[in-house]
Image (cartoon, rainbow, N blue to C red; front, side):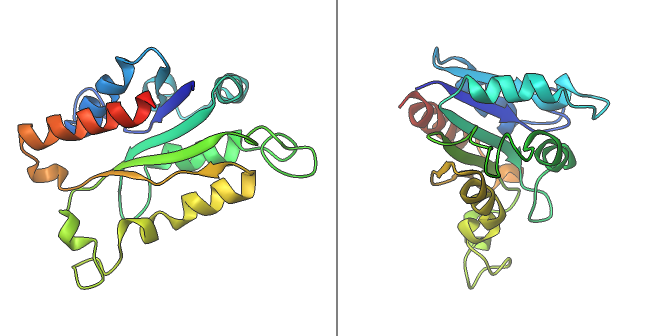
Length: 173
C-alpha cells in the first residue's frame, strides 16, 4: 500500500519535536512519501495539480498535524479548500478518493486524560476529529482510526520513541 503523509506544521524543522520525529520515522519506510506542506508552500500558495497528482498516486492519505484550538493549522484548511475540488474529489464526477484510505495523525499538547468526557476538554479525540471523518465520508474515502500522540508539551524521549515506533508500524501495513 502506497501511503502519502501530508505534514502540516509551520515549524516542523525548527519548533516541532513530536511531529518532526513522527515524520522522520514515516520517511524511513519505502511505501511512504512524506510531504512537508509548509516547506513546500511557505507563501501559502498551493500547487493544486501537484497535490492532486500526489493523492492520485497513493492508496492511503494521512494528514499529520498538531492539534491547535481543537482544529488544524491554517494551511491544512487552505489545502482542503483548494485541493478538494468539485469534480475531482467530490460531486458526480469527483472520484479521486474512492478506494483510498484516509487517516489523521494528530499530536496534542495536553495529556490523554484531558481528552475524556470528565477531562478538561470534555471530548475524546475521535469527537474532536469528527470534521475530518466527515470530509472522508464526503469525498468517498475510507476513514481509518486516527493516530494520536498525546502530551507533546511534556512527552519523554522514551514515550516519543514508542509513539514513533507505533506510527511506523501502522504506516508499514
